[in-house]
Image (tube, rainbow, N blue to C red; front, side, top):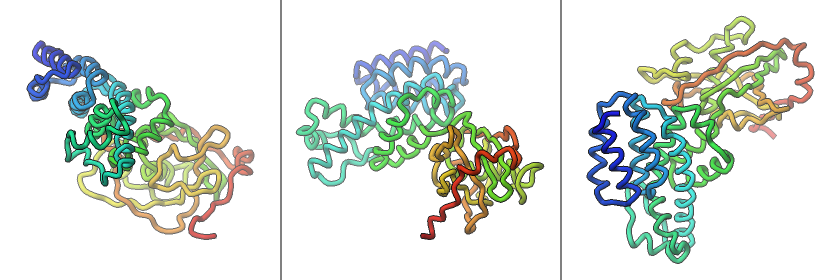
Length: 347
């Protein structure tokens, strides 16, 4: 990396870890020095930033996480700092939840706004009786959670490697979901933590009894899954009847942005092996597995559903690949385990 960028990276990480007040002067310098650097130079600097993200107090590490996220959005490799961001987010989330819980126990009304308000002695005094010496860290975590959440969304969106590196996934998903009641962006973190990569699905057509094995990666919700299945199967040889979505619509659910808003209509009801609806608002990870494989059953739509084209996570490219077609006679051992559709609007 350039000597100037290396120097300011070293200095700002040192200042962040030491809680040196010079951090405030170094932050704009870091942003200025990195502004016109190519991705290769940013890649070289990211591991040093990752050290600061991991070690600095949350109120300073959060700023380093935001800078790292902005570099990734400008072409740097998320793998150079993404794991550090996601790992630190777990710690910051836990402390922020402790702050929120202590605030509620104190009966002090609505907690401070994470993004609009700032740390204060008044806020600290509310949680000190419950948190004691941990109060300061909890308060700083509360007010920096939005920075770590924003950076984590970028890292998780851009890098399958970062997504694959997540450990104790169920716990992290749960914690992010708990934090979402305080910060809406944590719902995005929760769902990004559940993204499936290289996941095989068995897709079955109830009417014809045929099916397909598909592999998905980087799909952020079931609106996306639904549309990509339509693009892969409708009007294709060996696929499903019907007119496929326009190529530009399919591309908008893969890795391309549309120049203007367009509307998509669902061609099917998606149902799981237990007969429960697979709601478009959910994520593929919600689909239960049968004998180790997630199953999607295609039924005729019970009513028309329309939604805007495009990916929920614009920074995350997606793929859906048809790996093979299965004739009805190939699936005779599967169908006895597939329940009839359970219409939630009846019964």
